[in-house]
Length: 229
Image (tube, rainbow, N blue to C red):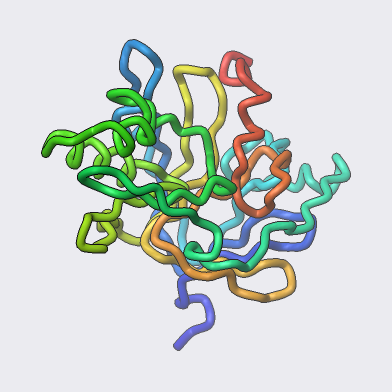
């Protein structure tokens, strides 16, 4: 097998994400309700990269989402700080009357899918109907970072089926560039070549500010208004 045909993402030292294996790339924006909670995704643009491409990680590229070498000029320090813990090691279980939920808080990307119909935590704690089950399932399944996972009372985890791909997320409601959404279990290597536990849903930092690199921790929210620039 050609080395470039194996799908993976490599975090380059103090540089961009190197995406290998002709992985599909598009740009999505959150669809929001009147209160600002996210209810879905809408495609804005589809890119046609081939083979290997590089995505900006420092937040300074003038050719977003692609790297243009700005990290070499702005002194970007991109050392990975995230642990290699598994999702089970990071998450805690919230038990409800009709459905449970796993929550790995450190993965939060502030996508706000958990805020529809009240919060996911309120639904789990207080809900007692079939409608509650469906709301929690949908809220958790839409969470791009995979922070939240709905768990049925017989222990089954509800995980959305996501094709392999990468989406650049835009938070138009708050006028801020969101994270990079990696879907479908694509392996991610740190700058030392060590692979993080593979997950179906991952959000990667692209503003350069995360304290949990390479993963998003919501620090891009400090840049609200940047879409107006």
